[in-house]
Length: 266
Image (tube, rainbow, N blue to C red):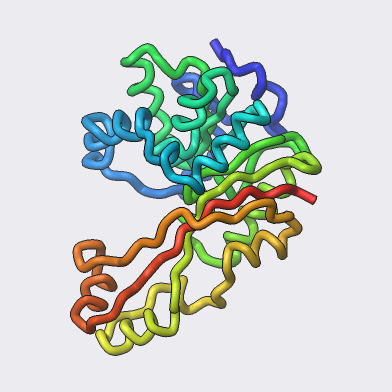
């Protein structure tokens, strides 16, 4: 039985089907691919660590987002929750009464989360829906609060799809509705391209496109930036991938900046 009445009347289309109490709208290929090994890792350790983590509660930038969400007491939709379920576990730790919907394009991921929660007889007040960020099946001007942890940055198709996803998010938000996100972007792209060239590695597609900051993307789409706080800076390591390994061999440092944004639909 659906317990989240907050999310019963927001949809602009009928789900293709229900599975394990998950609304399924399709376009699963727009999401990430996960292996059987990923599933085993989630069930053995990863879900446990992420559902009860205090990482976002202890970081000043992410805590600011969480405090705003819980202060306003609005139902919250995590738009691409991923294996960490986005901001929802931390929201629930601060205010268990807030209605939450975890959404992702990957149905396997959502089913595994449901299984994990059901096995522990918890999470009854978290609703789930499978849909693509590029085609959100929600009515215009319906949502008061949504967001996620790398829900946009993890979109792997480039600038055109970033724009599509942001347009969809803007569309579903009510006027003055809030978007709460932690997103990342590469620093010093010319230096990164130099590493690719000197290492004879084909540059990733994302580095060949026009580089637009998340701040600029949000402004261009019509959002007002209420807050922007640095979340962390990550240095790419040799064990991460071939780019990190090439950078270490050349004595170069490749960095990615993560920022926490509170945005409002104008």
